Length: 135
Image (spheres, rainbow, N blue to C red):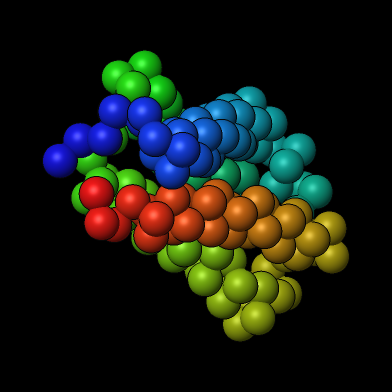
């Protein structure tokens, strides 16, 4: 079932997905345009990793922004998006804990800061979906 973003809870989901899409798209563009400098800042030896990640984030962010223009989203899509966000956060923490040597100190801060932002999107989306569960 598609939700047309008409209730307060669906508006929260709409806001979260839109913010998530903008953040993901801008992050992807940043990685594509400044992969060398960003890799140097965060301590990665291979900027191509950021190029691949940037393309993925552009695709993810673009798909989220499509929901804004369609003004609707399937709940199943929102659940999948939310799980992807949660996996991003878990993956970021695992990388920093298991392999901290691949990042500079600034890189660890950047990875954890981005994870905190993504966790906020997950929380907003999960809250909206939880409130909408009976609808």
